[in-house]
Image (cartoon, rainbow, N blue to C red; front, side, top):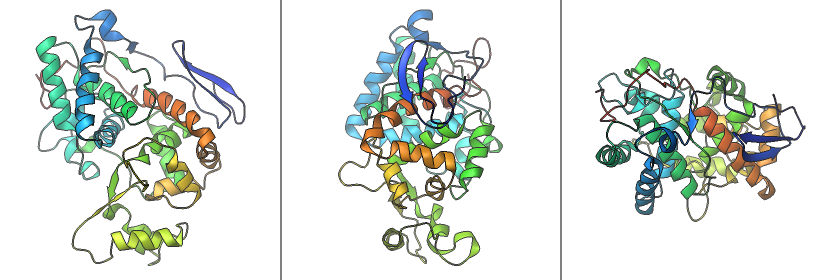
Amino acid sequence: MMRERRKCVFVSLVGIALMSLCIVRGENTLQSPVKLIWHYYKLNTTCPDAEEYIKHQVKLFWQKDKSITAKFLRLLSADCLSKNGCDGSILLDGPNSEKYAPQNQGLQGFEEIDKIKIVLEDRCPGVVSCTDILNLATRDAAHLAGAPSYPVFTGRRDGFTSTIDAVDLPSPSISWQEGLNYFQSKGLDVLDMTTLLGAHSMGKTHCRYIMDRLYNFQGTQKPDPSMDKSFLKELRKKCPKKSKTDPTVNLTPKSGNDYQFTGLYYSRILSRKAVLGIDQQLLFGNDTNEIVQEFAPKSGFEDFRRSFALSMSRMGNIKVLTGKDGEIRQHCRRRN
């Protein structure tokens, strides 16, 4: 069943009420076949408290470092959106592994996943996969920052291989249509794309990813005309043209906590104050614009949160390994 434009539908996952939306068409459930199970560890393994162990560790990390939410969100996206899908291959070490692809430069969160794995191996060895740890830890960190505590279906197993060639993340300067083509190649839709990019409500990016917008948009030697002029001036101060370093800027600049899950990302798109090109591009597609308009007001924040819950579950369902496929790694950085 598809959500059709302006037709209100009720969205749920295995009986769990998630949302009632009146926005652009999009899938309202997980992609078929659904191989994962809700509460897999509680119902089917010798580690029924696995999710509680993970949640406790994530809370400890988050209390010390609020940026852990943004780190985990990016790490999970890098894993699930690779050609291998959600198999924990981003966690594997090796000179040619995914984590060393240019698109993945600056990824963080590996040490925290390692620490969670140590706890789980101590309490129930050989049961919980690294890819499930990453999915659950990301959900818990996002919830601490203000996102919904959405159901994470589990039972994933870890992949055997990780190569740079498996990383096909596009440039953040692509058009909304190119972005949609990419997400659709992963089995996701326009609502998933516009929702998942909302994770840019927190975190930072390096100046190198926006220099083209600031100084040479599409080879014109001029800035991106879609950018608010005062915001352009502000970003140019932070990212000077002849800088010898590569500073970072907040993806969604705001007062107070820069690692809080909010809907400000969407209102800034409407104000033409998005940092990344792909984010500002959401203003120019008919469907993406409609979704942004829905999520931007304070009254639309709950719709965004609920859509985020479903889209994160759908992203976490890409090319999963279950049953006898893959393995349960003893150490997340290497095969058994």
